[in-house]
Amino acid sequence: MLDRVGLAEFAGRYPNELSGGQQQRVALSRALIADTGLILCDEPLSNLDADLRDRMRVEISSLVREVGATTVYITHDQAEAFALADKVGVLEEGRLVQFGSPEDIYFHPATPFVARFTGLAGELRVKIVGQADDGLVEVTAPGCSFPRLRAAGGPGSPAVSFEAGADAVLAIRPTGVSVARGGSEERHLTGRVADVAFRGRGYELAIDLPGHGRLTGVFARHRTVRGEEVALRLEPDGCHLFPADPGAGTASGAGAERVRVQ
Image 1 (spheres, rainbow, N blue to C red):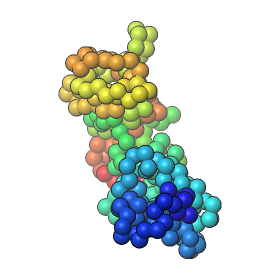
Image 2 (image 1 turned 45 degrees about the vertical axis):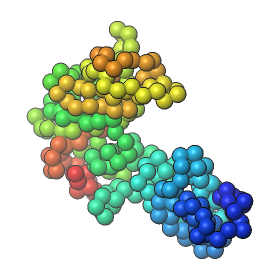
Image 3 (image 1 turned 120 degrees about the vertical axis):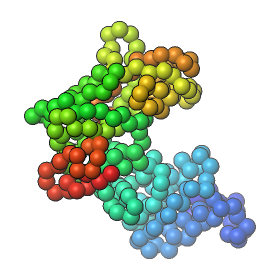
Image 4 (image 1 turned 30 degrees about the vertical axis):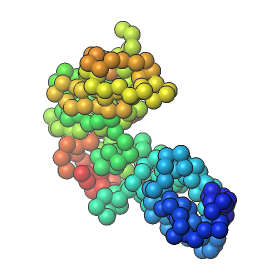
């Protein structure tokens, strides 16, 4: 078991002679050897460097499934939660606000808090123009042109309905926005590049939108320069529309109160 968690060479040491990260791996080994059938992991990777975190995340997933142990895993890192969990529960101030598969949590966040916790490029304040019978919503904001969007909700949480003229918050995933290239691509927003970070597979941009704040984590395959003006395209599947204030939208069916939680 020490070999599985990368500590075989330290077998002759006492735990208090190890680093904090190594001690965490000793604790994991002890829990698995005990064969209790139920394991609680409270942020077990928090003191590890990035490379070891990724390796241990895979090891934890493999080990607990091999021994058939039910594992409750507490983390503030949504990437860990999505990578490890069969089911994810999101707590806000001690209250369970959504429970479901990683895919449900990510693609159908029940509240703005869940959307923010699972990763956003940014948020825009918009106004509702109208909502069609198919559930798609038309929104507007100064200087912007939006595609029709689907209201937040879906599997595990009822969809929100909006009234024309109501204020709303458009939560945008990094996967929901991209730099428009060429005249043939539809353009919805215009902004100015505030920062550029090379990420190997491409670039992540921070883009200031006049009057609307900043979007971060916008992916681009080609390098841009700071200060350059760029056009952006929104992908409806990566955008989530919520009421701007609690109770501003309505949701039918069980769980409606969860949808309105801010």
